[in-house]
Image (cartoon, rainbow, N blue to C red; front, side, top):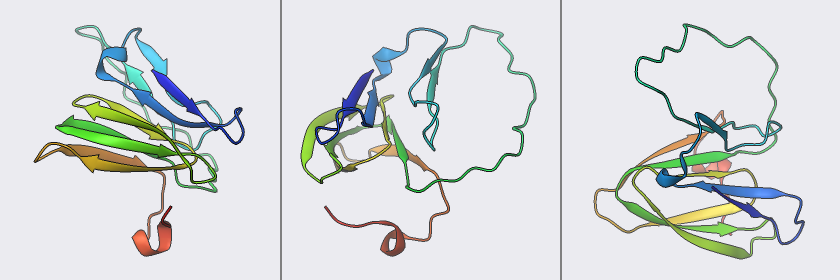
Length: 135
């Protein structure tokens, strides 16, 4: 797993890249516990059962949108930006790879026709015009 920290403030974790080959132990925390979006990589043994459960109600407040992208098929080139909008890294993400953005910005370019990704973010989401700004 690669952690990308801000150059403006090196204590701020901006992005995480978790490649398909990074799965190792049964549970790896991709997100620090204080972030709005929580992501983990999980490895299970055959016949493992996760008991039926639901999560306890609790007040959750978020000031910014955080986002995870998971490549299901194909390939993308992700570009990562710092809090001052300067480009800090590019990475190629392939099938099974995941990236999480906590702060800063990102863009991506599709490299393979028919690429499929999951996009997961905290909401609510009211559409691009009310949620995004260009860098």
